Length: 467
Image (tube, rainbow, N blue to C red; front, side):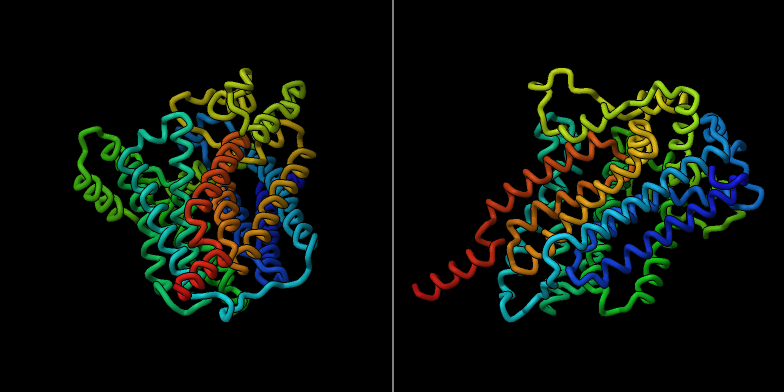
């Protein structure tokens, strides 16, 4: 631990993480090579899942008063240790993004409306909205589809075409000054978490989608507003998010009892959501229940700190790359790799923290926890750097593809980037979703090629004029 006081260590590393994020945000918005905001969404999702450590800075806060937090068996020193590891990994990710920005071509590629037919982007947006919307609501109406091997991965990845379609709508409004207004796009985007709430009462994936769309808009419009306004907008957005997230966590169990009741109707679910919203209260550092919710759900550092403490006592229990290999080669079917390891979840958490996690509950671990239990702090630094560098590389390739109208390349890259915005998933889960998303994006792009490739679109338009 950096300082003798756990509180001082927590405060220091929270400030370091925030400064690393703001520095990366400024770099990307002002980058001469452009950005679509994918690295911003990636870092922001991770930052959100560690911000709960701030609860331990509240005067008089004692997490052991909460039965669930008490059962975990961690201390304030555990949180400080875990946040230290996570913040170092976060800074390493910021470095990976900076370094990748300076590789390859250095010229800035700007959008030119004169060479970008409005009808091309209009058709691309609408075709993606139709297909993405179909799969998104198919999963909500028939959630059992997601549990079917192979088909489940296809359907789940296909629904991510919807947020990419909304990004196309943002491009059309910002670049061409036509189509839906930004508030209309925002209203449609807000349907995603609401539909998830009423359908499944699970918000994690929907929150990642909203972060992805918001950061895309920020990247496209950011240079017009200036960094001061951008930071103010992000501060306001962060407050709104924390207000909604913490209050929802306090009423979540009651709401889930309604949604998960097999005989519940959509009318009852909507009424239940309305009743839950009526119980929302303003954020307050004096509200112990709010601090407990913040610490329990948005403080991933506590599990990382517990793993650090356990590995210090049992250094022979490192994974030594086993879970990382499972992640990188997640595309290999179990039919071929018969002994492919299954990692993550309650068993993995118990092994590296000692906490007897329930097998009926899903526990997220995230990249810092998994990297540390494989190779310690060296693994956190190295894999954090490489992971973020991959996200920035996809961001650069996708930006150039969109600017030049090569949407057949942009679509797979965009839904692949969205698949990487999973701050609680294991490497195996993240990369299996990433590979599936690339394949689904490629297939969708090939099916809609005449609407998504500007050169093919121009050829078809030329032929129609001749005939």
